[in-house]
Length: 144
Image 1 (spheres, rainbow, N blue to C red):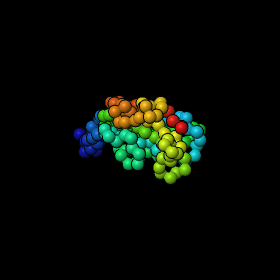
Image 2: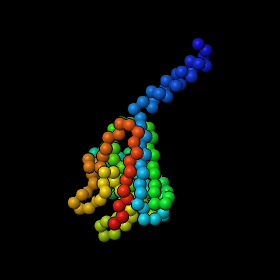
Image 3: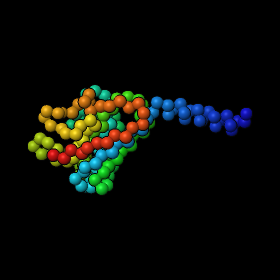
Image 4: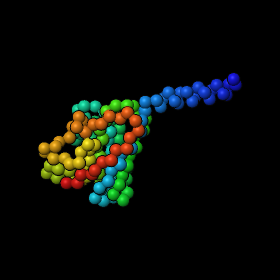
């Protein structure tokens, strides 16, 4: 065996081993009321992280533009496990969820939730799902 061939085999083996048990989560959201600002997709992987009122308890986050009422975020190389996703439409790019008296003025969303109200409040347990293969998650934007 040549030295070059052996190095190639070692490199390929390392790549295969490193990607074993790692998955891609694609999150697609529709129903934005406009294309202003950005959408923050937050990925959570622990109990007690949802609700995340100050937007700082996430495991990973992605900020993307809204195009034609649609936004998509891709999280790569995730280990198998339990996750939840939240989103908020930061229309004015101020980095926070703007609220009226009680409810958000900007669009929000949460995995496994079609609506959010006082009788259906979010938490990690109800928003979470198992990731054990590549997955595409479709989310509904909730506008109050």
